[in-house]
Length: 390
Image (cartoon, rainbow, N blue to C red):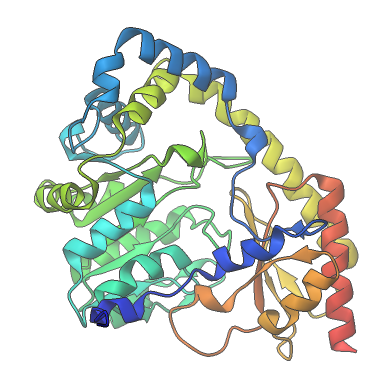
């Protein structure tokens, strides 16, 4: 016999980043590739204490099946945080997910039909393209500039099911949309009736000043908002959330029930026990300080070592630098040479929905490597580029 694959299975492809991470497991490789938070930032002691309290006080409840919507006190906490950012929502609109990546999958499952148009930034988060692609979406890249997507570019997306945006310290580009650009994009989306899916895993990782309010705050029921605990606590918890309009929420919930019944209730209770008394207000500033020092180290290394013709952003938060190489260079082709030189990065081409071009771009992550190793890794990359240019 032979297995007959579904048509959507043909659209499932391995993650470029995950494949690269396998390479970086080799001894001696300085990996500036993975978009992982620093393990040094994980609040191990607080998690251990919270775990002990949950197992002491509510062991049966924590280890039992739980509500698909999520743990009620955690949902209330999320709603309160959203209200502080200007979103007029209540806890009944919060769906706890198994990481925000599941939130993307649920959005795709509920909103995308084969041949539906989905509008995305250029570049955009590779994981979103992978989540939406099995539902046979047709992607349209919104025209943009160095500050992000242009409001006029939304005219090409009038018939899209939604626009997917990462306004804060975007993966991969690191850019943060200004308040004026957010307002203009929101007003244009309202004018043409374009729903927006706003993804915000990095918004708390600002360095000098917090980002402007979410676009969802202006869009109301025309927006879905996704958040995550992975970057401010630990990704191994696989805990995220979707804040959805009341009209859309029941279908997202039903899709969640069909996918995994519920996100682990034990994890939800432990996280709520950690954060309920303001722990993140004390913990997240320590992450920002660590990441800012590493950002500064990478900025200095790029300034010191990179050859002429290379350009990069300087992020004001988040985890990534986005580098544009001279047009004759191909970052994918150069990656094996970089690994031979002792470092790794992520080529930029997979982050674009439109095929072709963009071969001369790459992403560097600065948060998992000490400053001295950042300098060594960037110097190794610069050496590879100089030899290629020669």
